[in-house]
Length: 333
Image (cartoon, rainbow, N blue to C red; front, side):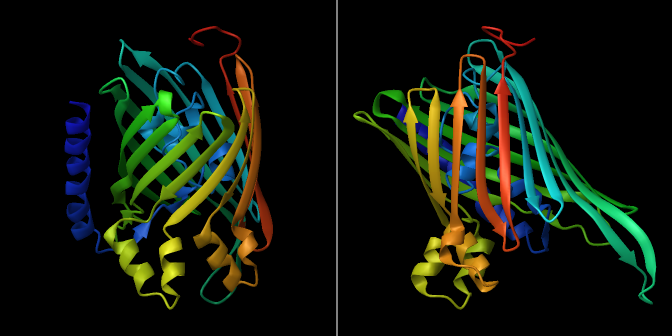
């Protein structure tokens, strides 16, 4: 029964791909939605859509990773992105009955102050730019090991006096087998369109199709993470036309991470993102710039994490996350 359900849901996901790909003939926008939202995600390569945990922030990567194990926890994160740009994330939710859960999340990226000039190169003063996404998600336990979820996002973007609005949807699946230390995830992320644009064009959101696999080992405190991303037809086509070796093109669709943990109290992780390394190498960096590292500590009522990665050749990006129940044994509210 469970295998048949997984197969049917897989067909449901695949059916959406040609529909969205056919519609997406215009430029995409709002890439800030693809930034990592947790220290753990940064540490294992920048994407993590399969690891089931009580860290509520993973819902930004795959809404199906959110469930009763993470409900009632307030999640907060902050990242110094690069050159005066900062991002922040917050999420909170509660369970519904025995199998459902809901959550509300907020993502924001502030680009800092910029100097404006007119067509005659005359200074017009400084201005700022901000991207914000407010989301609501609902997840449901389809079986004891399989969970499905949907998230709706309202996106607002501001540059100087110009504004834009968009609407996007995330759909996710998560399969978790605790006995085997196995978890698999799939997500259709950021599928949507612009409602109000800066100009006459209304670009679609930067949607993506992703599949992830995480494996823990029974006799070793180690967990491995593999994620395939950029699987929508347009991204595959763009990567295929790049002047790179075949192996480099293939690796641009994957991230890999390894994690060492002691029970549920401490974790230490390292990841590698080949696409990031290749892109930064063009600006004078090395393939080692695709590495990321992080560590975290947790107790019954709070958990903290910190991670570092390089997303720009000029600086190192740092992320700090905090998740808490404020001392309550069950739920905050």
